[in-house]
Length: 203
Image 1 (cartoon, rainbow, N blue to C red):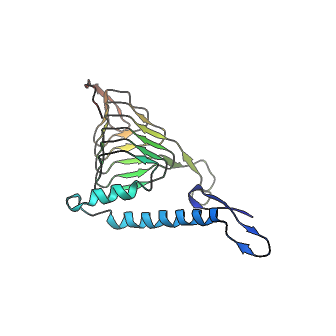
Image 2 (cartoon, rainbow, N blue to C red):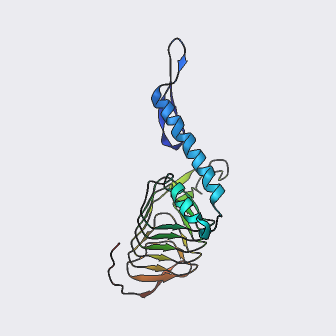
Image 3 (cartoon, rainbow, N blue to C red):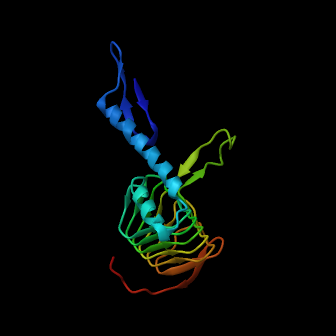
């Protein structure tokens, strides 16, 4: 009998004169238990202030829950980050009360600031179904935030968007399409406000 467990782990259970669990299945079960305990721990430390080590604790825990996370990361109180398919560079700030869903794939470059209250979502409900509440169907699209980007407070980024290198999303922007490199965008929906020139930097 083949069964599929959460988090995409596939195991095989056999019955031959009795039920037993292969070592591979034991390992899978332990991984799931560890992940669940880690997520519980994240909830516990979510609002610990940075001045008493809150950010350090959150970074240690979130490293276990995402695909990759670079060096010099700061995760402020209230941040909610979910989805294993998140790849994060170095020198990145996750602002206070930010909400991120990376289930559809989220790539964050280096030297990136994501301001407080920002909302970055890679999944959306399929509103074309007959019964939107009962026939739940999700649509996943990846988001890419390139190097040297500032996502200002209360910015909303919808699935499938690319935020170009050296760009700025102004406070409250609703980003519904790709942001060109070296630009400032703002408004709802966000449009290009001006072009900017930045010097190259080293990580």
